[in-house]
Image 1: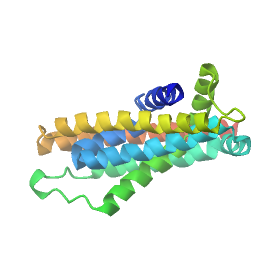
Image 2: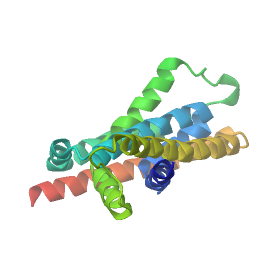
Image 3: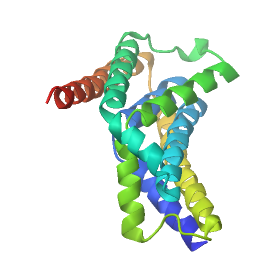
Length: 209
């Protein structure tokens, strides 16, 4: 239980800092509803869990591969964020009376998009490795149950953050009119595209050195 709770704390702490994924889920929760926002967050939680598993179990070959190609992954992730940001900037605000029903395909796309975007930042694995090492957590021979509990805790903790964000943003969104939603789209689009541009430029500069 102690390992599970520590994993939950780590997952929550890794997910909480403000960034493009948080902003994307926030915008979706406000504009598209709490379910879409939460499922978007679950995609990020699944990606965090993927990296947490690699760090906890000590899969060195995969870790080295991700770090070797981290610049390419960050560059691609930055370009995807730019596309998403521009799309968000140009998207019309959904009207309350004409809101599209939430289909399975829509939820799937929300999940996959944030999963891929979160995976496109392989430096997350460095954060997990550092935190696990500092807390004395991770793979030890004969302690598979503890490693699994740690990974489960990461997913639960990260999911808790996204649930809180989606619930608060979705509740807040019900009090906004169409004009405010349009401004939220514009601001979110600019910031998301800005994050993507910064990430793509940083990757390109590092690659050229």
